[in-house]
Image 1 (cartoon, rainbow, N blue to C red):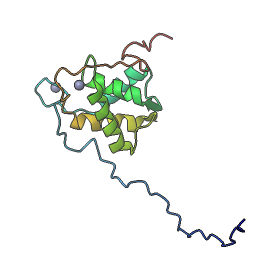
Image 2 (tube, helix red, strand yellow):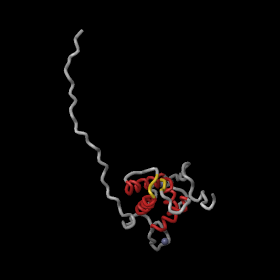
Image 3 (tube, rainbow, N blue to C red):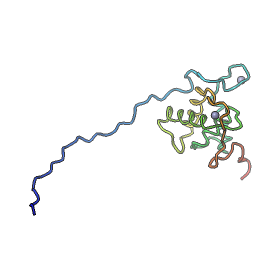
Image 4 (spheres, rainbow, N blue to C red):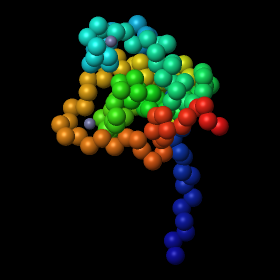
Amino acid sequence: MPTPSTTTVTTPVVAPTTPQPPAWVIPDVWHEEATGLEWCDCGDHCPLTRRFIATIADNVCGQASPERITHPQVIAIAKNVWAYESVCRFFTMAIEDAAVRVNGTVAKDYPREVGLEIVKAFSNRWNGCPEEGCEAYWPGPDAPAAGSEDPTES
Ligand SMILES: [Zn+2]
Ligand SMILES: [Zn+2]
């Protein structure tokens, strides 16, 4: 039986690299140019204000100025801003894009201000669903339909 060789195995020393988070510039969504569809179809080119989104957020969340806004609530707020009866996967994907743009990543929930910014960032660029005959599926099972919770009841 051959005796096992006693060569020492040297592991090459690799300098540990700390992965850096991608640098991104948080857009000023309240002042950037809106390039998508008009959110309001009255024809007056109404600006989508923070106050308007905040009011809808209060309604969706069932409380005034909630500390945090969940991702499903962000979707519900955007759905209400746009007065859609239901939304599809393209809509929710665009919300996810907006969350990445504003927050760096999609999260379970966001500080209120970030949640409002995501709705605005989404609305600035939403161009409508590109798919004809696309199946809308919202509200999902884990998200209450907007208005299903009456904040006056407790
Ligand atoms: Zn209008
Ligand atoms: Zn669609």
